Length: 473
Image (cartoon, rainbow, N blue to C red; front, side, top):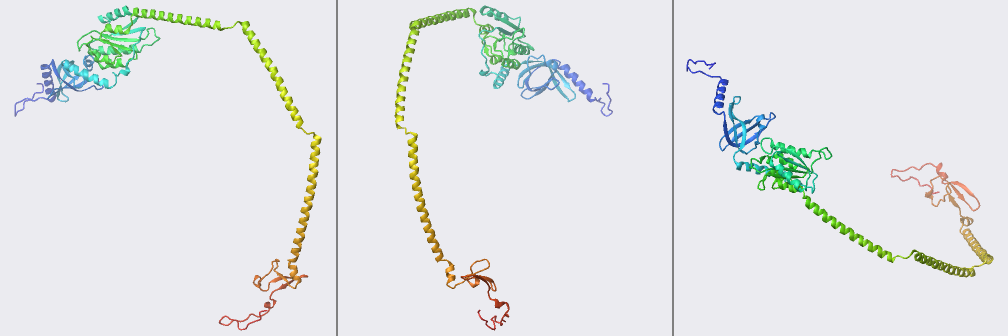
């Protein structure tokens, strides 16, 4: 050891932490340079670096593992939580945390049972998202002008499809060649489906009216690319109707659930996609014959209707004659009606003339009525005036008889205050007040109690009573 120092007490050399860590690293990497480890994937995570970190575990133990970014892009199996796999790689140590880990170079499914479990879990999860709903299915076009085929360009599948379509109904076919198994095949298949959908309808190469995704038969591992989530989502998102024809009739992949139609074989997919030309020709011939018969029946019926109408039509001269006769009859009826109307009006006019009175007679009658009314009015006014005059004289005599002047003539006098208001009691005016006294011949002024102005005031006793009692007047 380069830094070996002898301890005088023990005579044993010591190592630094780095030296010991490197020694352990060399030992582990030398002893476990190539290993295959089976375990269940737990908590896979991919940080921004692109590396994949996961844990392989069994019932009692756990092993840290890492997949470098470059290796992760080449894996045929994507690490998923709970997946039972066999990882191939080498052991190494990570001195920074004093732990060991497995550097994975490849992953394979540990048995078909684990692969089927992963397939079922994925199918259930995608179904819950609605990717397999029947409502999403699109009908296939009856006669597609262009068919897009996603498959291997060198296999027997494309030859079977081309041959079957050319036999049934030759049409334009666009082939998008892809790898149908192995690393990266799923991404190629998804890219082909997306690429066909992204084409323009009016471009130089028209967008297909129908897509066929096809592959021959194989094992579950061989068909696994069509179970990848990226392929299933691309098929479900396709706006072009899609036929899935992967494997044989007994093979089922997840793309079959997402496709609009599943064909048991690629040849069957070609039959689903195109009609039979001979059947179409026969159908067209039958339709043409039915159309000819319908047109003939229609024409025959129209001819019969025209002939029947022709028999019911009159000659133009007869028609004009009938119309002229109708006009003559109408004029005759009009003349007769006018004469009758004039006779009735003349009779009514004569009746009204007999009832009329001449203006002179009418004026004379009015003058006589006015004269009679004038005499009646004059008599009535005289009577009213005479009655009113009698009432006035009677009222004047009554007023004169009841006038206060007659009372004054008998020796009485009327006492009023300065305002002319009659004084009826002595309390109505104050002492020494000036009043007016009206006699029968004239009116005089007087002052009440004039002696009170010069007379001394009487003295009051302690009891409040006057010592002397004066006169009342």
